[in-house]
Amino acid sequence: MHTWLVDICERLQNLRLVVWLVTAQYAYPFIQWTHFTGLSLWLGTTLALDFRLLGAGKKFQTAAQLSDALFAWNWLGLGIAVLGGFTLFATAAVGYIDNPAFRLKLIVLLPLALAWHIFVQRKSRTWGRTPETPAVAKLAGLMEIALWVSVATAAVWIPNY
Amino acid sequence: MPRLCEWLEQIPWIVAITNSAILISLVWLVHYLGFFLLVGTTAIVDLRVLGVAARNQKLAPLAGQLFPFAWTGLGLVIASGFIMFAGQATTFYPTAVFRIKMGMVLLAFVFGVIVQRKSLIWDRAPSIPTAAKWLAFASLALWIGAILAGLEVPAFIPV
Figure: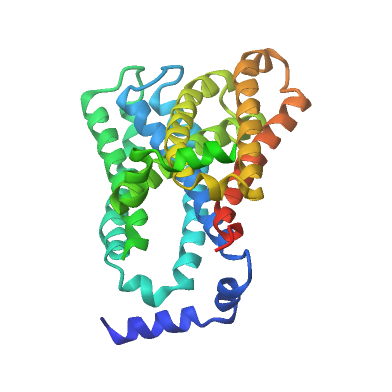
């Protein structure tokens, strides 16, 4: 492990605010709460669009309309999730950078899922013009669901190391 | 009820799942993904009722599109949540925060059903009624509160 990275993590972990968050009773769940509330907005809206692209559920709206309705809150959700996630990371930074599940999530799966999400969201405007989506849209939606499930799986596995 | 909790904890397949790191992680995964889907989609409908999301779209088609996803999420949450509860039923059941959480979820669910059923009527009105906005606000607050209560449960369980 690069010593400078460990050094940064140690400094982060020892910030007065971070130390307070870890030691204060009932404070830690509030950080998790920020992460999970953001994730609800982010993944709830992301998965909803993927399911619509797949053609699952009702067809009251086209995928393009749904994507348009969800767009701003989708990204706001990611912002909140990242804020909470970074704070969670800060509380035990040195441990996290050594954790294989965390590394897999942050370095491999998350960037991959995020890039795919941007691609799918942009394409949903053309794929989603008609109530019935093309086969490529269904495949793309399915792939995005699989990618986020893999991100969440890695995240859930973090405490097991 | 305590007897029922003890019985739940001893069901062989519940014990098997609870004691397996892989299986219980899988259950947690389903619980998380389920409530992300449930809360995220419900929140969008609530925010639309409040007039802050998707203002250029009608409420009813958006609600009609999103609620089936929300109820799918709810199904996943209930199935996984039951396993999580059953494995530690005697610990969870007497914990106040856990009861508060369940109360919030139940109320939020009722509010969700009302919003879904009324969305067509609210759409036909010249503007969405104030009562509807209060209901949406309460639904939003309850779901966000339920997440917090759920996360606080471990902090309140005596070790």
